[in-house]
Image (cartoon, rainbow, N blue to C red; front, side):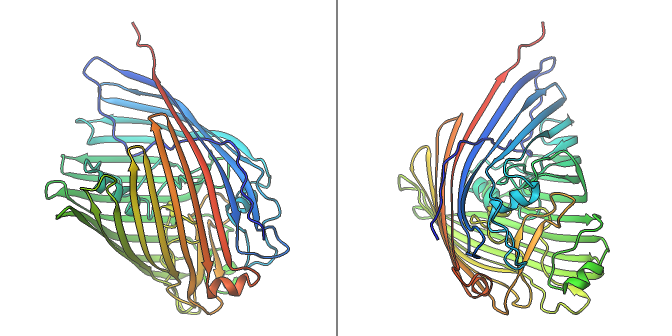
Length: 489
Protein backbone atom coordinates (compact mmCIF):
# COMPACT_ATOMS: atom_id res chain seq x y z
CA UNK A 1 0.00 0.00 0.00
CA UNK A 2 1.28 3.46 -0.89
CA UNK A 3 2.64 5.54 1.98
CA UNK A 4 0.87 8.91 2.11
CA UNK A 5 2.67 11.89 3.64
CA UNK A 6 0.99 15.28 3.23
CA UNK A 7 2.20 18.58 4.66
CA UNK A 8 -0.22 20.98 6.39
CA UNK A 9 0.44 23.93 8.71
CA UNK A 10 -0.33 23.38 12.48
CA UNK A 11 0.52 24.69 16.07
CA UNK A 12 1.30 24.90 19.97
CA UNK A 13 3.93 24.46 22.65
CA UNK A 14 3.25 22.95 26.04
CA UNK A 15 4.11 25.19 28.95
CA UNK A 16 5.88 23.14 31.62
CA UNK A 17 3.41 22.86 34.46
CA UNK A 18 6.03 22.03 37.05
CA UNK A 19 8.16 25.10 36.39
CA UNK A 20 8.38 26.97 39.68
CA UNK A 21 7.77 30.69 39.88
CA UNK A 22 10.24 32.94 41.68
CA UNK A 23 8.45 35.69 43.65
CA UNK A 24 9.03 39.24 42.49
CA UNK A 25 10.90 41.70 44.68
CA UNK A 26 8.78 43.26 47.38
CA UNK A 27 6.35 45.84 46.07
CA UNK A 28 6.80 44.87 42.41
CA UNK A 29 4.90 42.63 40.03
CA UNK A 30 5.47 41.24 36.56
CA UNK A 31 2.65 40.39 34.18
CA UNK A 32 3.00 38.81 30.75
CA UNK A 33 0.88 37.81 27.81
CA UNK A 34 1.93 34.64 26.00
CA UNK A 35 1.00 32.49 23.02
CA UNK A 36 2.35 29.15 21.83
CA UNK A 37 1.42 27.59 18.52
CA UNK A 38 2.26 24.02 17.49
CA UNK A 39 1.40 22.75 14.02
CA UNK A 40 1.99 19.17 12.93
CA UNK A 41 1.30 17.10 9.83
CA UNK A 42 1.30 13.33 10.30
CA UNK A 43 1.52 10.54 7.77
CA UNK A 44 0.57 6.96 8.62
CA UNK A 45 0.90 3.62 6.90
CA UNK A 46 -0.57 1.39 9.57
CA UNK A 47 -0.58 -2.41 9.54
CA UNK A 48 -2.98 -3.24 6.73
CA UNK A 49 -6.54 -4.40 7.20
CA UNK A 50 -8.18 -4.26 3.70
CA UNK A 51 -10.51 -2.76 2.65
CA UNK A 52 -10.04 -0.27 5.52
CA UNK A 53 -7.82 2.77 4.86
CA UNK A 54 -4.45 2.25 6.51
CA UNK A 55 -2.42 4.92 4.62
CA UNK A 56 -3.36 8.55 5.15
CA UNK A 57 -2.19 12.00 6.15
CA UNK A 58 -3.85 14.63 8.34
CA UNK A 59 -2.99 17.80 10.22
CA UNK A 60 -3.46 19.30 13.65
CA UNK A 61 -2.94 22.61 15.39
CA UNK A 62 -2.92 23.67 19.01
CA UNK A 63 -2.86 27.33 20.02
CA UNK A 64 -2.30 28.02 23.72
CA UNK A 65 -2.52 31.62 24.90
CA UNK A 66 -3.22 33.63 28.02
CA UNK A 67 -1.88 35.81 30.80
CA UNK A 68 0.28 35.24 33.87
CA UNK A 69 1.52 37.42 36.70
CA UNK A 70 4.08 37.12 39.52
CA UNK A 71 3.42 39.13 42.66
CA UNK A 72 5.45 39.33 45.86
CA UNK A 73 4.05 36.08 47.24
CA UNK A 74 1.42 35.13 44.68
CA UNK A 75 1.42 34.12 41.05
CA UNK A 76 -1.44 33.17 38.76
CA UNK A 77 -2.01 31.93 35.21
CA UNK A 78 -5.03 31.88 32.92
CA UNK A 79 -4.50 29.92 29.71
CA UNK A 80 -6.91 28.97 26.93
CA UNK A 81 -6.36 26.36 24.24
CA UNK A 82 -7.80 26.15 20.75
CA UNK A 83 -7.36 22.66 19.29
CA UNK A 84 -8.15 21.70 15.69
CA UNK A 85 -7.79 18.53 13.62
CA UNK A 86 -7.66 18.79 9.82
CA UNK A 87 -9.01 15.91 7.72
CA UNK A 88 -9.01 13.03 10.20
CA UNK A 89 -9.65 9.83 8.21
CA UNK A 90 -13.23 8.55 8.41
CA UNK A 91 -12.37 5.20 6.83
CA UNK A 92 -9.49 4.05 9.06
CA UNK A 93 -11.57 2.16 11.65
CA UNK A 94 -12.01 -1.54 10.97
CA UNK A 95 -15.28 -3.34 11.67
CA UNK A 96 -13.15 -6.25 12.91
CA UNK A 97 -12.81 -5.61 16.65
CA UNK A 98 -9.25 -6.97 16.86
CA UNK A 99 -8.05 -4.60 14.12
CA UNK A 100 -9.74 -1.51 15.55
CA UNK A 101 -8.45 2.02 14.89
CA UNK A 102 -5.58 2.16 12.40
CA UNK A 103 -3.30 4.87 13.78
CA UNK A 104 -3.89 8.08 15.73
CA UNK A 105 -5.81 9.74 12.90
CA UNK A 106 -8.51 7.12 13.38
CA UNK A 107 -8.47 7.79 17.14
CA UNK A 108 -9.16 11.49 16.56
CA UNK A 109 -12.06 10.69 14.23
CA UNK A 110 -13.56 8.15 16.63
CA UNK A 111 -13.32 10.48 19.64
CA UNK A 112 -14.91 13.46 17.89
CA UNK A 113 -17.14 11.92 15.21
CA UNK A 114 -15.89 14.43 12.64
CA UNK A 115 -13.03 14.94 10.19
CA UNK A 116 -12.48 18.60 11.18
CA UNK A 117 -13.17 18.87 14.94
CA UNK A 118 -12.23 22.07 16.77
CA UNK A 119 -12.82 23.48 20.24
CA UNK A 120 -11.78 26.30 22.58
CA UNK A 121 -11.35 25.42 26.26
CA UNK A 122 -9.62 26.38 29.51
CA UNK A 123 -6.22 24.67 29.61
CA UNK A 124 -4.89 26.13 32.86
CA UNK A 125 -6.32 28.52 35.45
CA UNK A 126 -4.61 28.49 38.81
CA UNK A 127 -3.54 30.61 41.76
CA UNK A 128 -0.34 29.81 43.65
CA UNK A 129 1.01 31.09 46.96
CA UNK A 130 4.80 31.05 47.48
CA UNK A 131 5.76 30.70 51.15
CA UNK A 132 9.54 31.01 50.80
CA UNK A 133 11.10 31.55 47.42
CA UNK A 134 10.10 29.05 44.73
CA UNK A 135 10.46 25.72 46.54
CA UNK A 136 7.67 26.17 49.11
CA UNK A 137 4.30 26.80 47.50
CA UNK A 138 0.67 25.80 47.26
CA UNK A 139 -1.33 25.82 44.01
CA UNK A 140 -5.08 25.55 43.45
CA UNK A 141 -7.06 25.37 40.20
CA UNK A 142 -6.63 23.72 36.80
CA UNK A 143 -3.07 22.85 35.84
CA UNK A 144 -0.86 20.36 34.06
CA UNK A 145 1.06 17.86 36.18
CA UNK A 146 4.20 15.89 35.30
CA UNK A 147 5.21 13.27 37.85
CA UNK A 148 8.97 12.87 38.08
CA UNK A 149 9.70 16.54 37.30
CA UNK A 150 9.55 17.84 40.87
CA UNK A 151 13.17 19.03 40.95
CA UNK A 152 14.88 21.21 38.37
CA UNK A 153 18.26 19.78 37.30
CA UNK A 154 21.12 22.14 36.47
CA UNK A 155 23.22 19.43 34.85
CA UNK A 156 21.92 19.19 31.23
CA UNK A 157 22.49 15.42 30.93
CA UNK A 158 20.66 14.76 34.20
CA UNK A 159 17.86 17.10 33.11
CA UNK A 160 17.47 15.17 29.82
CA UNK A 161 17.36 11.83 31.60
CA UNK A 162 14.79 13.08 34.09
CA UNK A 163 12.50 14.54 31.42
CA UNK A 164 12.84 11.73 28.86
CA UNK A 165 13.55 8.52 30.80
CA UNK A 166 11.75 8.94 34.15
CA UNK A 167 9.05 11.61 34.06
CA UNK A 168 5.45 10.96 32.96
CA UNK A 169 5.67 7.16 32.94
CA UNK A 170 2.52 7.13 35.06
CA UNK A 171 1.08 10.68 35.17
CA UNK A 172 1.53 13.37 32.53
CA UNK A 173 -0.25 15.72 30.14
CA UNK A 174 -0.08 13.35 27.11
CA UNK A 175 1.56 16.29 25.36
CA UNK A 176 1.95 14.60 21.97
CA UNK A 177 -1.81 14.61 21.45
CA UNK A 178 -3.63 17.70 20.26
CA UNK A 179 -5.94 18.45 23.21
CA UNK A 180 -3.56 17.11 25.88
CA UNK A 181 -4.55 16.63 29.54
CA UNK A 182 -5.01 18.86 32.60
CA UNK A 183 -6.12 18.28 36.18
CA UNK A 184 -8.48 20.20 38.46
CA UNK A 185 -7.08 20.09 41.96
CA UNK A 186 -4.38 21.18 44.36
CA UNK A 187 -0.65 20.58 44.67
CA UNK A 188 2.08 21.67 47.06
CA UNK A 189 5.87 21.71 47.15
CA UNK A 190 8.11 21.81 50.22
CA UNK A 191 11.80 22.00 49.41
CA UNK A 192 15.20 23.11 50.64
CA UNK A 193 17.64 23.18 47.75
CA UNK A 194 18.77 19.55 47.61
CA UNK A 195 15.39 17.94 48.39
CA UNK A 196 11.73 18.29 47.51
CA UNK A 197 8.46 16.92 48.88
CA UNK A 198 5.53 17.15 46.45
CA UNK A 199 1.88 16.30 47.07
CA UNK A 200 -0.96 16.52 44.55
CA UNK A 201 -4.64 15.60 44.42
CA UNK A 202 -6.57 16.19 41.22
CA UNK A 203 -9.34 15.08 38.93
CA UNK A 204 -8.50 14.40 35.31
CA UNK A 205 -10.07 16.54 32.60
CA UNK A 206 -11.33 15.51 29.19
CA UNK A 207 -9.00 16.10 26.25
CA UNK A 208 -6.21 14.09 24.58
CA UNK A 209 -8.03 12.84 21.42
CA UNK A 210 -11.30 14.64 22.28
CA UNK A 211 -10.94 18.28 21.23
CA UNK A 212 -13.19 19.56 24.04
CA UNK A 213 -10.91 19.70 27.07
CA UNK A 214 -13.33 21.51 29.42
CA UNK A 215 -15.32 18.76 31.23
CA UNK A 216 -14.03 16.88 34.25
CA UNK A 217 -13.90 13.09 34.38
CA UNK A 218 -14.71 10.93 37.38
CA UNK A 219 -11.05 9.90 37.46
CA UNK A 220 -8.90 10.97 40.42
CA UNK A 221 -5.19 10.97 41.21
CA UNK A 222 -3.43 11.38 44.57
CA UNK A 223 0.35 11.73 44.42
CA UNK A 224 3.12 11.98 47.02
CA UNK A 225 6.84 11.99 46.21
CA UNK A 226 10.13 12.77 47.94
CA UNK A 227 13.12 13.64 45.73
CA UNK A 228 16.73 14.28 46.71
CA UNK A 229 19.81 15.46 44.81
CA UNK A 230 23.25 14.30 46.02
CA UNK A 231 26.88 13.74 45.04
CA UNK A 232 27.59 17.21 43.62
CA UNK A 233 24.31 17.19 41.67
CA UNK A 234 25.27 13.98 39.84
CA UNK A 235 22.74 11.72 41.54
CA UNK A 236 18.99 12.17 41.96
CA UNK A 237 16.57 9.71 43.52
CA UNK A 238 12.83 9.72 44.17
CA UNK A 239 10.31 7.64 46.07
CA UNK A 240 6.63 7.98 45.17
CA UNK A 241 3.14 6.71 45.90
CA UNK A 242 0.14 7.24 43.61
CA UNK A 243 -3.52 6.55 44.26
CA UNK A 244 -5.80 6.13 41.25
CA UNK A 245 -9.60 5.92 41.14
CA UNK A 246 -11.82 5.51 38.06
CA UNK A 247 -15.50 5.83 38.94
CA UNK A 248 -16.87 6.17 35.40
CA UNK A 249 -19.95 3.97 35.10
CA UNK A 250 -21.13 2.16 31.99
CA UNK A 251 -17.63 1.91 30.45
CA UNK A 252 -16.28 -1.57 29.72
CA UNK A 253 -12.79 -2.13 31.11
CA UNK A 254 -9.99 -3.18 28.77
CA UNK A 255 -8.36 -6.43 29.94
CA UNK A 256 -7.97 -10.05 28.84
CA UNK A 257 -11.22 -11.40 30.32
CA UNK A 258 -14.04 -12.46 27.97
CA UNK A 259 -16.33 -9.62 26.87
CA UNK A 260 -19.29 -10.95 28.86
CA UNK A 261 -17.26 -10.91 32.09
CA UNK A 262 -16.05 -7.38 31.46
CA UNK A 263 -19.53 -6.11 30.61
CA UNK A 264 -20.84 -7.54 33.88
CA UNK A 265 -18.07 -5.87 35.95
CA UNK A 266 -19.32 -2.42 37.06
CA UNK A 267 -16.93 -2.06 40.00
CA UNK A 268 -14.68 0.96 40.30
CA UNK A 269 -10.94 0.77 39.71
CA UNK A 270 -8.89 1.68 42.79
CA UNK A 271 -5.17 1.09 42.29
CA UNK A 272 -2.20 2.05 44.45
CA UNK A 273 1.22 2.35 42.80
CA UNK A 274 4.42 2.53 44.88
CA UNK A 275 7.90 2.92 43.50
CA UNK A 276 11.07 4.85 43.01
CA UNK A 277 13.81 5.78 40.58
CA UNK A 278 17.46 6.77 40.54
CA UNK A 279 19.51 8.71 38.00
CA UNK A 280 23.27 9.19 38.18
CA UNK A 281 26.22 10.39 36.11
CA UNK A 282 29.72 8.93 36.66
CA UNK A 283 32.74 10.73 35.13
CA UNK A 284 35.02 8.37 33.19
CA UNK A 285 37.86 9.29 30.85
CA UNK A 286 36.74 11.55 28.01
CA UNK A 287 33.09 11.47 29.06
CA UNK A 288 30.67 10.08 31.60
CA UNK A 289 28.51 7.04 32.17
CA UNK A 290 24.85 7.35 33.05
CA UNK A 291 22.53 4.95 34.83
CA UNK A 292 18.75 5.02 35.23
CA UNK A 293 16.78 2.64 37.42
CA UNK A 294 13.00 2.71 37.87
CA UNK A 295 10.50 0.34 39.44
CA UNK A 296 6.93 0.17 40.75
CA UNK A 297 4.48 -2.27 42.39
CA UNK A 298 0.68 -2.10 42.33
CA UNK A 299 -2.18 -3.37 44.46
CA UNK A 300 -5.88 -2.57 44.91
CA UNK A 301 -9.05 -3.40 43.02
CA UNK A 302 -9.64 -3.77 39.31
CA UNK A 303 -13.40 -3.79 39.51
CA UNK A 304 -14.33 -7.31 40.59
CA UNK A 305 -10.69 -8.46 40.54
CA UNK A 306 -7.69 -7.82 42.75
CA UNK A 307 -4.87 -5.76 41.28
CA UNK A 308 -1.36 -7.24 41.69
CA UNK A 309 1.24 -6.02 39.20
CA UNK A 310 4.71 -4.58 38.79
CA UNK A 311 7.17 -2.99 36.36
CA UNK A 312 10.91 -2.20 36.21
CA UNK A 313 13.42 -0.44 33.97
CA UNK A 314 17.23 -0.41 33.84
CA UNK A 315 19.18 1.80 31.42
CA UNK A 316 22.72 3.04 30.93
CA UNK A 317 24.97 4.80 28.48
CA UNK A 318 28.12 6.78 27.81
CA UNK A 319 28.43 10.35 26.52
CA UNK A 320 31.64 11.54 24.81
CA UNK A 321 32.07 15.04 26.21
CA UNK A 322 35.37 15.89 24.52
CA UNK A 323 34.02 15.41 20.99
CA UNK A 324 32.47 18.47 19.38
CA UNK A 325 29.00 16.96 18.95
CA UNK A 326 29.04 15.10 22.34
CA UNK A 327 27.50 11.84 20.99
CA UNK A 328 25.61 9.82 23.59
CA UNK A 329 25.09 6.06 23.21
CA UNK A 330 22.56 4.35 25.47
CA UNK A 331 20.76 1.03 25.89
CA UNK A 332 18.14 -0.31 28.24
CA UNK A 333 15.50 -2.83 29.16
CA UNK A 334 11.93 -2.46 30.41
CA UNK A 335 9.51 -5.05 31.76
CA UNK A 336 5.94 -4.79 33.01
CA UNK A 337 3.80 -7.67 34.18
CA UNK A 338 1.02 -9.22 32.14
CA UNK A 339 -1.92 -11.38 33.16
CA UNK A 340 -1.37 -15.10 32.58
CA UNK A 341 -4.83 -16.29 33.66
CA UNK A 342 -7.95 -14.37 32.56
CA UNK A 343 -10.17 -16.72 34.58
CA UNK A 344 -8.81 -16.13 38.09
CA UNK A 345 -9.61 -13.32 40.53
CA UNK A 346 -6.39 -11.34 39.93
CA UNK A 347 -5.67 -8.67 37.34
CA UNK A 348 -1.89 -8.92 36.97
CA UNK A 349 -1.44 -6.50 34.06
CA UNK A 350 0.60 -3.46 35.06
CA UNK A 351 -1.70 -0.44 34.74
CA UNK A 352 -0.10 2.74 33.37
CA UNK A 353 -2.62 5.20 34.94
CA UNK A 354 -2.59 8.58 33.05
CA UNK A 355 0.81 8.76 31.33
CA UNK A 356 2.45 10.40 28.35
CA UNK A 357 3.18 7.14 26.51
CA UNK A 358 5.09 8.57 23.54
CA UNK A 359 8.06 9.49 25.76
CA UNK A 360 8.76 5.75 25.89
CA UNK A 361 7.21 4.56 22.63
CA UNK A 362 8.01 7.20 20.01
CA UNK A 363 6.18 5.19 17.38
CA UNK A 364 2.82 5.25 19.20
CA UNK A 365 1.65 1.69 18.58
CA UNK A 366 2.21 0.31 22.11
CA UNK A 367 2.50 1.52 25.70
CA UNK A 368 4.14 0.22 28.89
CA UNK A 369 1.55 -2.45 29.78
CA UNK A 370 2.29 -6.20 29.46
CA UNK A 371 5.59 -5.41 27.79
CA UNK A 372 9.23 -6.37 27.36
CA UNK A 373 11.24 -3.69 25.56
CA UNK A 374 14.97 -3.93 24.84
CA UNK A 375 16.35 -0.83 23.14
CA UNK A 376 19.44 1.05 21.99
CA UNK A 377 19.65 4.72 21.14
CA UNK A 378 22.12 7.35 20.00
CA UNK A 379 21.78 11.08 20.58
CA UNK A 380 23.99 13.64 18.89
CA UNK A 381 24.24 17.42 18.44
CA UNK A 382 26.09 18.12 15.18
CA UNK A 383 25.46 21.85 15.54
CA UNK A 384 24.54 24.15 18.41
CA UNK A 385 20.82 24.34 17.63
CA UNK A 386 20.39 20.94 16.00
CA UNK A 387 19.60 17.67 17.82
CA UNK A 388 19.57 14.20 16.27
CA UNK A 389 18.30 10.97 17.81
CA UNK A 390 17.74 7.42 16.64
CA UNK A 391 16.25 4.47 18.55
CA UNK A 392 16.08 0.72 17.93
CA UNK A 393 13.51 -1.33 19.86
CA UNK A 394 12.81 -5.06 20.12
CA UNK A 395 9.37 -5.36 21.72
CA UNK A 396 7.60 -8.41 23.10
CA UNK A 397 4.56 -9.05 25.25
CA UNK A 398 5.36 -10.12 28.81
CA UNK A 399 2.48 -12.63 28.72
CA UNK A 400 1.15 -14.23 25.56
CA UNK A 401 -2.13 -14.87 27.43
CA UNK A 402 -2.69 -11.12 27.79
CA UNK A 403 -3.31 -8.33 25.26
CA UNK A 404 -1.25 -5.93 23.12
CA UNK A 405 -2.09 -2.60 24.79
CA UNK A 406 -2.14 0.93 23.38
CA UNK A 407 -3.29 4.33 24.65
CA UNK A 408 -2.60 6.79 27.45
CA UNK A 409 -5.55 6.53 29.80
CA UNK A 410 -8.98 8.05 30.37
CA UNK A 411 -9.78 11.05 28.18
CA UNK A 412 -13.60 11.19 27.95
CA UNK A 413 -16.74 9.49 29.26
CA UNK A 414 -17.35 7.32 26.20
CA UNK A 415 -14.40 4.92 26.10
CA UNK A 416 -12.03 3.36 28.62
CA UNK A 417 -8.89 5.09 27.29
CA UNK A 418 -6.71 2.01 26.77
CA UNK A 419 -7.14 -0.35 23.81
CA UNK A 420 -6.22 -4.03 23.86
CA UNK A 421 -5.69 -6.32 20.86
CA UNK A 422 -5.44 -10.13 21.13
CA UNK A 423 -1.99 -11.69 21.12
CA UNK A 424 -2.94 -14.68 18.98
CA UNK A 425 -1.10 -16.87 21.47
CA UNK A 426 2.24 -15.25 20.56
CA UNK A 427 4.63 -12.91 22.40
CA UNK A 428 6.81 -11.31 19.70
CA UNK A 429 5.28 -7.90 18.84
CA UNK A 430 7.50 -5.60 16.72
CA UNK A 431 11.00 -4.47 15.91
CA UNK A 432 11.20 -0.73 15.38
CA UNK A 433 13.73 1.82 14.13
CA UNK A 434 13.31 5.58 14.04
CA UNK A 435 15.18 8.84 13.52
CA UNK A 436 14.35 12.41 14.52
CA UNK A 437 15.89 15.81 13.84
CA UNK A 438 15.01 18.91 15.88
CA UNK A 439 16.18 22.40 14.98
CA UNK A 440 15.96 25.36 17.38
CA UNK A 441 17.12 28.40 15.38
CA UNK A 442 16.12 30.94 18.07
CA UNK A 443 14.04 31.11 21.30
CA UNK A 444 10.81 31.57 19.32
CA UNK A 445 10.90 28.75 16.76
CA UNK A 446 11.30 24.97 16.80
CA UNK A 447 11.15 22.61 13.82
CA UNK A 448 10.97 18.84 14.18
CA UNK A 449 11.07 15.93 11.73
CA UNK A 450 10.41 12.31 12.64
CA UNK A 451 10.26 8.97 10.80
CA UNK A 452 9.74 5.43 12.14
CA UNK A 453 9.38 1.98 10.62
CA UNK A 454 8.01 -1.07 12.43
CA UNK A 455 8.44 -4.68 11.40
CA UNK A 456 5.49 -6.56 12.85
CA UNK A 457 6.14 -10.00 14.32
CA UNK A 458 3.88 -12.90 15.29
CA UNK A 459 1.34 -10.88 17.31
CA UNK A 460 0.86 -8.35 14.51
CA UNK A 461 0.73 -11.03 11.82
CA UNK A 462 -2.14 -12.80 13.58
CA UNK A 463 -4.25 -9.61 13.30
CA UNK A 464 -2.97 -7.97 10.09
CA UNK A 465 -1.86 -10.83 7.78
CA UNK A 466 -1.86 -8.74 4.55
CA UNK A 467 0.96 -6.41 5.61
CA UNK A 468 2.51 -6.49 9.05
CA UNK A 469 4.82 -3.51 8.51
CA UNK A 470 3.98 0.07 9.53
CA UNK A 471 5.41 3.56 8.98
CA UNK A 472 4.83 6.87 10.72
CA UNK A 473 6.25 10.33 10.02
CA UNK A 474 5.54 13.92 10.92
CA UNK A 475 6.69 17.49 10.42
CA UNK A 476 6.14 19.81 13.38
CA UNK A 477 6.54 23.58 13.67
CA UNK A 478 6.28 25.40 17.00
CA UNK A 479 6.25 29.13 17.72
CA UNK A 480 6.64 30.64 21.22
CA UNK A 481 5.83 34.28 22.05
CA UNK A 482 5.58 36.30 25.25
CA UNK A 483 5.62 39.99 26.11
CA UNK A 484 5.43 41.96 29.37
CA UNK A 485 2.26 43.93 30.04
CA UNK A 486 2.54 47.61 30.93
CA UNK A 487 2.87 48.16 34.67
CA UNK A 488 0.25 50.20 36.52
CA UNK A 489 1.31 53.68 37.55
